[in-house]
Length: 119
Image 1: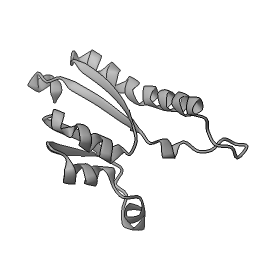
Image 2: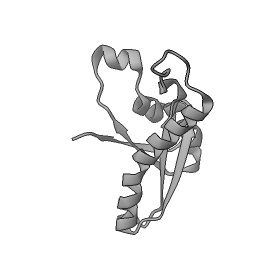
Image 3: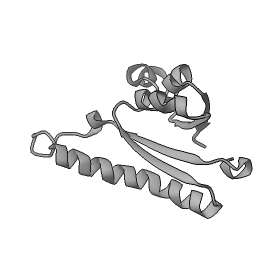
């Protein structure tokens, strides 16, 4: 889509520190360990996007944010024309208990939102 429209992309990944579990010995994860885990997971998540953008000749900026994914994306939404995000397609009690990042983004973003579902 970006290539067809001559647009630039910003790939954003948000790492929720609460998702980083205590270590195997029951102790908490240090700030350095948390940062290392965040960096590793962010790199893995963005490497694919970078390679596709490069292959297609689309200019790409990468942002790694920390915090609640929905809140962080909504915060930066005022700076963009469109947000494209995935949906895990959770249903029933799982959706009720976990909430939905994509639903929150659709509700509160300051720009249009396109939800891409998994095939």
